[in-house]
Length: 186
Image (tube, rainbow, N blue to C red; front, side, top):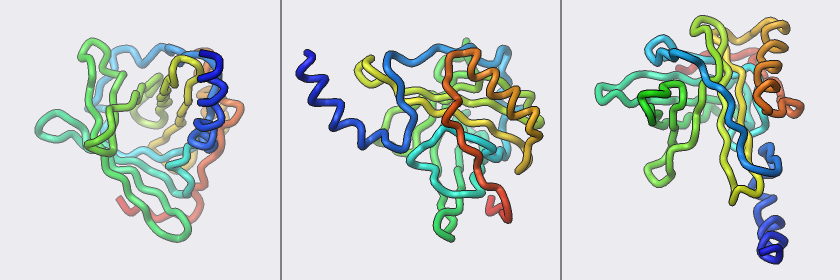
């Protein structure tokens, strides 16, 4: 088994080079109690995030719209190298008893990835976390601080990071998202 690990780790590291990975299984943070999806729908702007290979641009925003079949259309938009890039996906409530634990997929060929709303006031800020275990040896973290506006007071960002840290989510590598000079394409 140790030989397999020694061989796998060098092969997997390039795949997660733009991500944040940590040894051991994913943490299990508390999510927003009594989460109301309908209040969460609409446009959110990315304020800060843990590095993610699929988000290298600026002016990053997401729009969530309820479909007739009760799935959620997710449209992520960013400007990268001067071009607007869109990714459309689907979010679902995986367990009605825990509505803040959504799953999101951007392809018919990929399983739903965790999209957990840890905290939100629905009007100004939301904290979102996703984690993927890799053979329970290490995990890849994704975390986002979202806002209904392109800017958020420093105090709110500091408080958001405290909430992540309380739940064993390392925010030391969080990066601000450039929201300067953005026109909303959504």
